[in-house]
Amino acid sequence: WGMPQNMGYPINTFNEETGLIVTPDGKQGLFSSNLKDGYGDMDLYQFEIPVSKQPSPITYVKGIVKDKATGSYLEAQVKVINVSNSQTLYDDFTSKENGSFLAVMPLGGDYAFNVSADGYLFYSAHYELQKSSLNEPIIIEIDLEQLKVGSNLILKNIFFNTNEYALLPSSLIELATLTSLLKNNPQMNIEIQGHTDDVGNEVQNAKLSLDRAKSVYDYLIANSISATRLTYKGYGEAKPIKPNDTAENRKQNRRTSFVVTKI
Image (cartoon, rainbow, N blue to C red):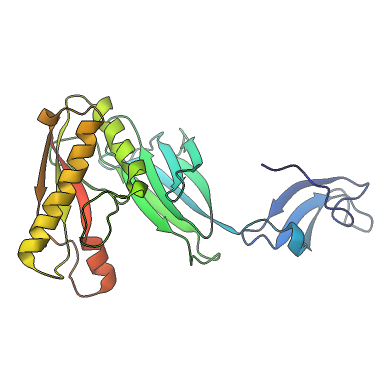
């Protein structure tokens, strides 16, 4: 928060103005007031916010979190973190009654989005909001899966440069979440898996995917996770989740994931 500023007349008057709400694009405000010539008591008013006073535009992600097997609502921790500077923008829990949450994200950034609850695999998403539309908030329903052997999770916020296997700094957010999951579940073992698309040489893709999986393996060991709990494997282009026929599909096939091997 910055220092509050009096926006002056006609927004601020000697009457009562309450409940100010700013539209997501930052251009308009809504408030209730008992201004003269109103309909009586508190009426709703809308006004254009001066350009010099307009906040940065935002969008939001709104949803509910449930148990995948039972459909029951979960109290889960929801985090939104700016991957460029590791700033946490949202860190709160879903409603106990209905599993709901609403997290605001400023436009113009890239964000790691994670949802976690004790005894469950966390949920991972990546939102690139450089070109997001203000008219399209993100509405999702998240089904968290209880920890069990065979559970598989794609790590949506693990990043590498093209044809390289050194973890980029923006990966540290997701790696910290994975480390916490393993520390909170000391009997849990995993296999870290690397995957590529089908562009390039098949043998080289297999090696690249192996090296990328090992980079995650090395990070976990360096952060006090026992090597006896971890294995890693590179699958190259052998296990696509989408046809390699578009740039977007190939992007999804280039991924790092893990599978639970013991619990």
